[in-house]
Length: 320
Image 1 (cartoon, rainbow, N blue to C red):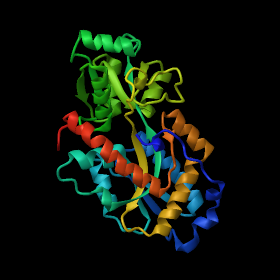
Image 2 (image 1 turned 60 degrees about the vertical axis):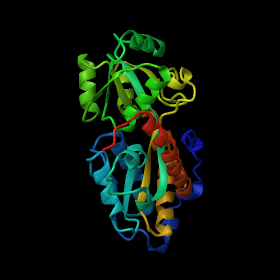
Image 3 (image 1 turned 135 degrees about the vertical axis):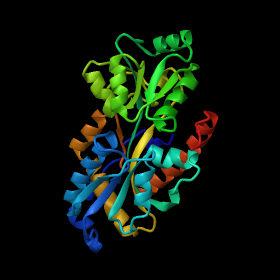
Image 4 (image 1 turned 30 degrees about the vertical axis):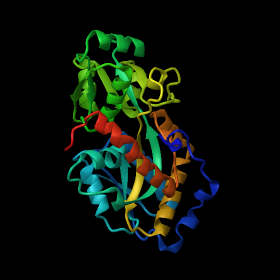
């Protein structure tokens, strides 16, 4: 993985100067950020935090529009077809521009339909067991070897990065388990608490409340490094060196958006990500705050396809 996924980029104080962002007549009206997920999830929460702060900086309302469906395809297509004037953005996730372009046969958009604004955050997934389940990663491996293919874990679908990350973990640990597909984290959590699902595989926004409410224990994170909000919880890389399965959130605009608009949006978004309150909230949700330049985000997107294409092929993730 690129180093951009392992560090937070510094935020210049000059980015906090709102008057500079309004020069050149942008924005001319309210701005919409399309979120390709339902309200209430980690993508939605991040976007609303940024939108509130960007509204203050840009002097125009930055609104959030949820357009879920089709493994993020519905929202992404809407953003790709929007007017390229900087007033419509997409909060993309790893699934949108990392997995879908590889496994979707008739995807109605492509990476070239977008211009990068900023890579906002990267984040791993947590693997959670109930208190009557395995106590740590070695115990999980032992249980999986004793019951090959019988331990169940929940994800939001076989073609999501959540499942791909878990497949990477299982491959590196040399064990097999059974994936159970759910329509969202809430249904997965209900079965986990009811005892009909052995493991949760979720992002920090779902995992950390489970931990804080003493509803389960996080066995490990799918990142190369530990998550700051849970310093005592190991990463799976400590047992499978080199493992680093991360997803990400980032802002993009339609291709051919004027560079001046992209520059203003980047400055406002990076300033928001530099806000201490927002950084604390995101860190507490298990995310690594980045806040990149457009060029850095563009390079990151290109390398992501190179990284994930052989992984998805090797793991035989089904084409849609």
